[in-house]
Image 1 (spheres, rainbow, N blue to C red):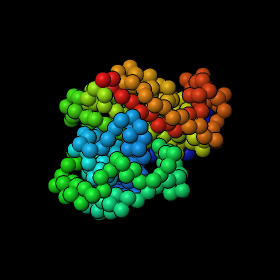
Image 2 (cartoon, rainbow, N blue to C red; image 1 turned 120 degrees about the vertical axis):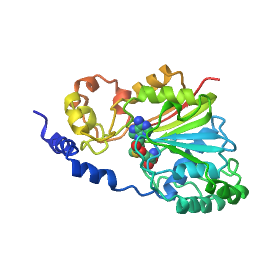
Image 3 (cartoon, protein in one colour; image 1 turned 180 degrees about the horizontal axis):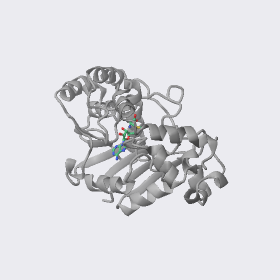
Length: 301
Ligand SMILES: C[S@@+](CC[C@H](N)C(=O)[O-])C[C@H]1O[C@@H](n2cnc3c(N)ncnc32)[C@H](O)[C@@H]1O
């Protein structure tokens, strides 16, 4: 018998099998993410990656799982990227009107707005040492010209994505924001990203390893047995793969990606190890405590 706290989450999973409710879920909430969120995500990855030699001008960029945040790609293009490809499982962004987001992002960049920090987005990662506008990385005098180029259509979008959506070795950067914890086949995703990157190309990924609303504790998703978890997931197109960070790093390495930077973050509000399900009870301390992580990967040159 599952513990009482699991019951509403199991019931919610069962409800995903009710067709009208599933249709309602699929229709709701497909609004573009705020421009300031997209601006913060892109510039934070950019500043982090600059420390690993990345420059936006002329870069061929893709994003796994942009969700409603295609503005991240628009910001990359405005900063000089040559192309941007959004690769999602679900076409969250298919019906978005990007004109207003593009205009708002162009205004933020043109005036060199500081990167939104922890006060505005307390849970957003990566965290930076400073949030000043990265003047050395972005040519602000070119924003108007770039806006016109982006309007002419530099954004490509595939949902669901396939390996052959992008040519092998055709990317300088692939990034993701709170996505890899939800991908059903993370090993396949790392292999695809390895194939798309040119030698020396970079990956920049924020992983949100929390329970995503399936428990009152951030690590409560690790308390469900495999069978219980299948019920919680129900018919949702994705939820959580429940892989701890170490498993992601091992899969990335196995795919042929070099792990060049890992920032692990612990968080309060966790269930003790003895209350987790069997495969997670034995995790070592560092694995069990990692709530969020930022990972930079590189395809070896
Ligand atoms: C929490 S949302 C994050 C969206 C966006 N990156 C953001 O920061 O707002 C998770 C995203 O992962 C996507 N996703 C789930 N499984 C995926 C897969 N196998 N391949 C690509 N994207 C996937 C979902 O469709 C969704 O867009």
